[in-house]
Image 1 (tube, rainbow, N blue to C red):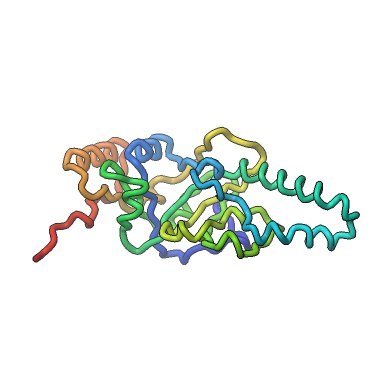
Image 2: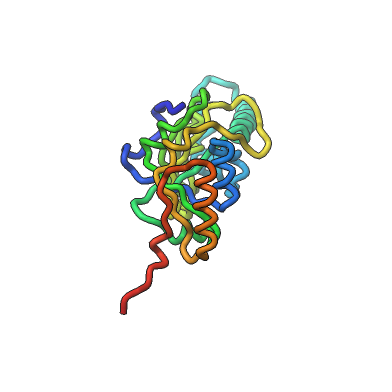
Length: 238
């Protein structure tokens, strides 16, 4: 279930969110009636969950203020770093794109011609989460990983930061509040599909048979949300 958290900056209730996925993941969503949360360290960006260099450089100062013998500080910093790494490996997330309209870049990255986009709002996303596990939702911060200093008092701070080169993703991230163990690959969390899916948009330049297939699968799972073809392949006017 959704819970607010001071480290998270959620979008406004009516903000439009998109999840660009391939067809197999769409079928899995309907079949499982659940969103798949991936391990943070398996998203493909090696910097996920890490801290900027400037933050790392501040760690000796943090421990020096604790009246600890100076010879013990390097080992304590190493232990602190290892513990953070363990928590990052236990972090499970589900990612969305915030935008009023479709994104060509997101189609190319995550959809392709055989992809679909789930369209919803922040309000619907927060209300669809049925699992008892606490879920936190917030916008990603895009920062300079050389110069930015972020707080280390809460693991969520680094889970909500990415390099500026990913700023085009305009990501809103759901983070599971369960850090008890490392789960291989990821985990499904139950959702109310009817609440979640406001509209289904089929990828631009996809063939008509693929649109028919999406409609057929949606009907089979009794999904009532409207299905439309991407507006990006409209015919230009000269």
